[in-house]
Length: 111
Length: 117
Image 1 (cartoon, each protein chain N blue to C red):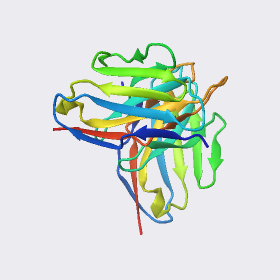
Image 2 (cartoon, one colour):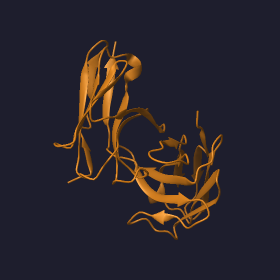
Image 3 (cartoon, each protein chain N blue to C red):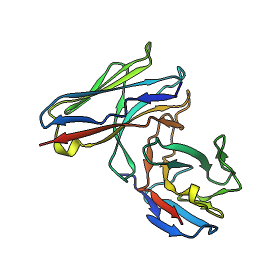
């Protein structure tokens, strides 16, 4: 089983739509969880951390289910500029420094 | 905010050439820097963890003699791909982590696209 699994997509949605991405991770020792965004041929950029209680940042809502080892990202009112690949990232173990990246889910928002 | 600069952005060179990539933290001191590699449509894969003043820790399957890492100061780490071959063509990205207790985020450089002919 891969350490971090994501549906590669692409998810094609119209502007204004709501879209959700899911991710599962295999290492139960992982302590920190993140969603990164990566534009084509660019470096990944931190979108948001994911907390057990769930957290929201504007149009973005992240959820974590530790029991199921499952992470989600919800994007409301999609914008054209949201088109990117969304990477699910977890820390490798109980330490903080080593990150394990999923392959990413591609989102394409069309006019 | 924390800025990480990576140089060069693009490298195209002949097979057998050695290529050096620099990663600098511009406005903070980074005791730990990370080197990743990303092939097309693949995830970022950690190659090695670089600690200032000590030897890098390489991930399983990454040849330390092939990918030389030097982290001589708190603001600079270098990755040298020795005798590069076409299969080494990839997107190489570094990140730097701020000093401090608990979780400190990694800040990524903008990557180096390496093409070996």
